[in-house]
Length: 174
Image 1 (tube, helix red, strand yellow):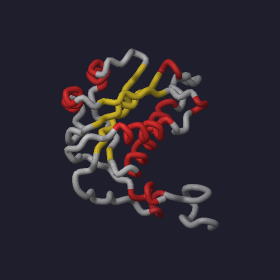
Image 2 (cartoon, rainbow, N blue to C red):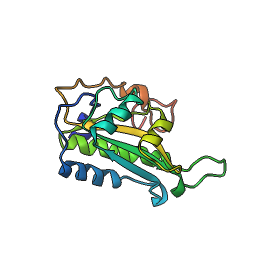
Image 3 (cartoon, rainbow, N blue to C red):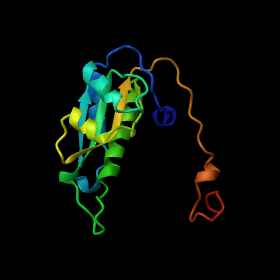
Image 4 (spheres, rainbow, N blue to C red):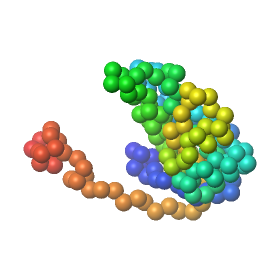
């Protein structure tokens, strides 16, 4: 519970590399995420080269400071199924759950990161040489946090949680 309740967005990183052992643990946790029908309609590119990180950052305004490590989380359309309405199944949600596992693992290991969705997808697709069926969904910069980070303000439980129906009183069993 401590890891879940204390994780926060990290956007500034110390000038230290992330060791291979830590990267391996984070990737293992990421791949353990739930997946709709176990399709695992995801793919990930781990970026560590400074030049590639600079280029990606140039087209991703959501990356505030250059990280030592970045994971590009992609939706793999070749493993997904379209629903009757023509929408993709839960594959995009599965990518998000894998990223959440990645962020929780990073925090548990003393690292931090922040999911970024503001980037120019066609440019990222080209920079990372992604085939057509892989769509970049989130970029996740990761690294050792630079200094303390303030805790994000959360909405009150009574504002966002109801029991049994939305119009019921906020408390359980009422």
